[in-house]
Image (cartoon, rainbow, N blue to C red; front, side, top):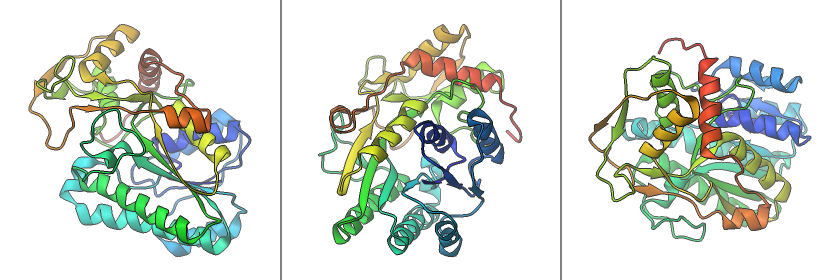
Amino acid sequence: MLVTGGAGYIGTHTCIALIEAGHTVVVADNLCNSKRESIEKFKKIMNTHIPFYEIDVSNRKAVETIFENHQLDGVIHFAGLKAVGESVEKPSLYYENNVVSTLVLVNCCLKFGVNRFVFSSSATVYGDNKVPFVETMDLLPTTNPYGETKAICERILTDIAKANPSFSVSLLRYFNPIGAHESGLIGEAPNGIPNNLMPYITQVAKGMRDYLSIFGNDYPTIDGTGVRDYIHVMDLAEGHVAAIHAMLQGVHIYNLGTGQGTSVLQLVKAFEEANGVTIRYEIVERRPGDLACCYADVEKARQELGWIAKRDVVTMCKDAWRFEKNTLHQGV
């Protein structure tokens, strides 16, 4: 199984879940938003050798080398740029990187007869639909170029699968992965200032940052702060394994979330209670494009994949803090 972006946060955890399920894994990653040490750490966790290619998967020649060197039975495509704010500032970079890499990988699959493709999509493709988000919803315009690249790639993969009946595609729409592997060896370790909430919370708890900025407290939610569907990264990883094992002909779309919403303030309180620490925060202005509420309908994944998220928010908070305490930050 080729895992692109396999040195990243979700990628490393999914590699562990795949190996635990008996799969052989090959990783490709250009390390633009990940670290080589992550590869060594999950090799240590699994006590196994994992072929690693430091390449950009939008480079077709480099990708073809992997397909030539390994007998692959599928591709899980995580690689891509993912910072919403940056995508607004540099839309051409996001369209070029995220869309081209998907096209390169699909064309290599078709050329080499690899017929299973799992795509790392996002709840952002739903736009401002009514919650809970259901896979059958029409996709509304997204609020940023990052989300648009995910929607475009979904359409590309759907069209290619229609034209190639033996090509099977799973489009996995993630909600908000947090937490870390229970070993504390791998977790979310962004380069520079975190874009996501949990690593910012853990860095405040560690004393690396003075306070957490909470963007708005006047949303129509339980406490005025934004509500999201937080899912443990290992539950998310196991969802990929379930999708691979259940893959049928054609295109299949699944939400990967818990089906429950948690506000920013509720998550902060859960973190404090789970770990016995205090998180300083300040309320600041809303961020443009942020939704008030975002959570999944997960019934389809339960019925068709036999998959549900098992770990609760307390476990997510404990695992994230355990990893943060083991982490040495550089250049932050």
